[in-house]
Length: 418
Ligand code: NAD
Image (cartoon, rainbow, N blue to C red):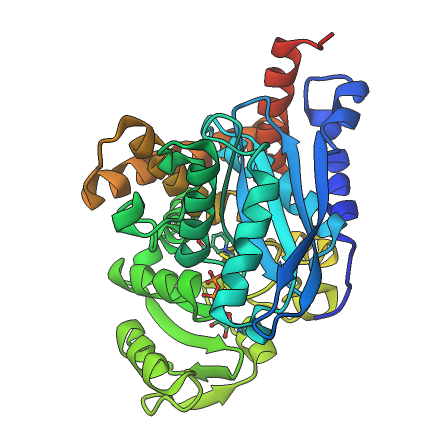
């Protein structure tokens, strides 16, 4: 990992990169490179010892032309305003490529949650929810979990909002526990879309994913579910890793068994059925048919990309390839299904959760998975249509052409007020 790009600069350059293929003026492109508004707030929270501590928090509402702002809330010491703005932009283009009626938003608190007790985190979350209350809502802005937040934090935000507003409105937030209005299928959704997108890419290239060898970097929610589902399609998962390192078996690893081992021991690295240990860079450079980066951003930079031998990459993680890596991989004819499509299963099932909350009518897991499948396949077809029509270099460019065009159309149709 290197090449630490400012994420907001990266977002803006991705939009500039496709502007010539989008049927809209430069003035609209300029508008679509900036958030509509950003809240920066200082939260005062009482520690368990009675002292007070200040925390900075942000919420960026990037674009609401296609529907309510949608995007997670991250707890991390490295959260910055530019990161939150960039992530909210990527959410805008992610909801647009899968064509769901939502915009893009993102939030974050500058905090290392491991340093605080559960009751301190609850007070911090509720303090942020109080600040957010006037700007969120089922038709305004619908937050969700992100790094270091989950069902617990979503339930606290929902409860705070409903108490302030004196209502019951589970659709104000997604990623909730099932008993609090969550959706079936949400836990598996990101890995599921990553694998559907990869399967479509193999079909498009005239291959068959069931014959593929696969390496998966990161064995958390997105990584392990991707490994399990790609294995169910008949592919052979030869390598997986987590932050402790990687493991390799030429004949294939058993995804469920590796997961059970990780649950027991905390990591995959000592798994006994593996032939070899690998570093993460070695895993990323394996000669496999499909590589699924499912850990962190900037996992592959331009230098490491020179060693990547996979034919297809499906990005479960957000931003795992640097812009420099993208260029190198394009020259090597490695096809990358970009994050805004590959991992869009998460936000798509969040959208289903929101729909079910509004209908007060809940779907079966089977229905959730079928609707997700249809949406990801349609998005992939729109991407490849744009790829061919404009003779583009990468699938990423194609995804941005489609999504920026959709947001630009909604912006222009709305007109400006006043
Ligand atoms: P997670 O915390 O469940 O898992 C992350 C995994 O990555 C862990 O196994 C961890 O050990 C591993 N890891 C961390 N650093 C690593 C390193 N340097 N090398 C190899 N492995 C490393 O997180 P997640 O929910 O699976 O998210 C993973 C990625 O997918 C993130 O980029 C996230 O933004 C993206 N994503 C997740 C979802 C979702 O619904 N979970 C949705 C969209 C995007």
